[in-house]
Image 1 (cartoon, rainbow, N blue to C red):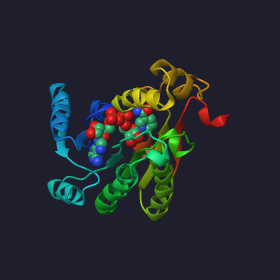
Image 2 (image 1 turned 45 degrees about the vertical axis):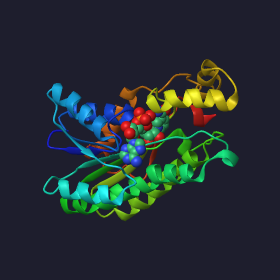
Image 3 (image 1 turned 135 degrees about the vertical axis):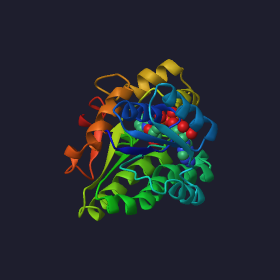
Image 4 (image 1 turned 135 degrees about the horizontal axis):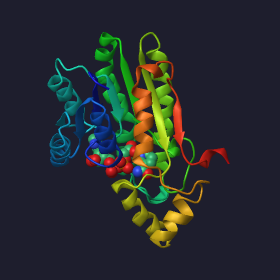
Length: 255
Ligand code: NAD
């Protein structure tokens, strides 16, 4: 990863921060971005304290102005790897789902990656190289109740990526979507509480009877598994893998 620069959205927490640290440890220069400015600076500091190369920039992927400012701030700095990771969740049956929250989820999870790709593709094209990696979800392939916006957006992300794979087939740019089952991050910790309320069951039952039940392997996905997949997809050797959904689901979807 030496001489590579990676920009990660939603990188102040969870999976995004894990990817940032892992790519930095492999020698990449990292641009940590997140809607939460304070958390961005903290995340940057954590990597800098370890002697790793990172800068932090506030970026709300739903905000056109933020994306324009990002491109200005990056002037002269080429981005080789874009990780579309920023995410939110809301758990509710559709009848009770606030429509502004529904639209926000689609904006963050689907339109957000379209905005960042649109902004960075011209310079990737100019450099003749680019690796775009979306953090999708098992919910890009299968459904669960109470997650209509999230499931719709993650399914859409896979379709979006197939189109961009075709549009970039004339150069060494690839775009792929990693689809993990549950990973223990702040987003999931909150969901355990919300699902317990929605289903009227205990938090332990949410973990065992809802989250891990569909997975033959019955375990959360580790950050290391995602990091290793990112590392392969970002490599020069993965030049012919594009438009794909890579599934890390402990056998969920083969049943
Ligand atoms: P997380 O809550 O730990 O991190 C998400 C980050 O996104 C936060 O730092 C948050 O501030 C940031 N963010 C939210 N809205 C944003 C916006 N508008 N612009 C920029 N940043 C924004 O969650 P996580 O579990 O690490 O999730 C990361 C990605 O992984 C998400 O896309 C999520 O859907 C996906 N995912 C998570 C799991 C899981 O089980 N945790 C499973 C499959 C997929």
